[in-house]
Image 1 (tube, rainbow, N blue to C red):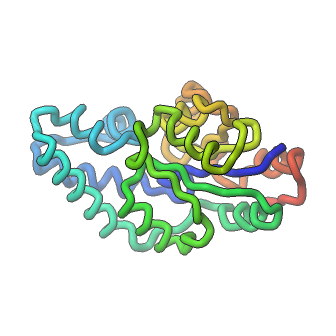
Image 2: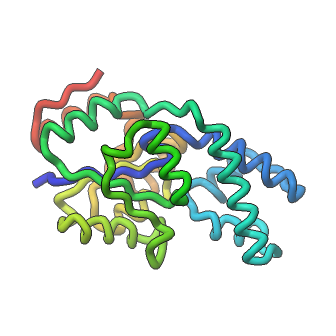
Length: 223
């Protein structure tokens, strides 16, 4: 029986990827590295900052990598003051509350970004449960973040649905045995399907979502 909805943050609650891409472009130019969209999607999107830095700038020391990542995230927050939730999210969250379902945020994003974005989106009270990859033994694409969410909420995998937007996140949630709906805000449908998504939708207004959740509980409409 459906008992909980688990959400990723970046690209899922809100389309932040254009801002992250711009911030990474600006920061990496300081290291004489130019990146395009394809590079961003394959080497950066959905990954943890330490992994990204080690992959693309392996000559940097740990301290230098941490400084780069912090500067990048600070630039992102400067750009992100006017973020708006993905279409249909408000209606879905209202439905979740009406049904009495549990809800949690499961993200690779750094703590400062999570606090900032939930504040900008006015969703802090909506997500009292936040699972940060930086607090765990491993982040996405490892299943650990979603496994921890299930344990924390006292759930079996079949009790939950996850919303994700990146191959990394999809591999994490699917690896934890959770039915995963991908949001195609960041990546192509075929890439998300190849990563293992059970279904791909454009945003939370997709008719599939209402039909699917109505088979689970009912009374959801989209527009």
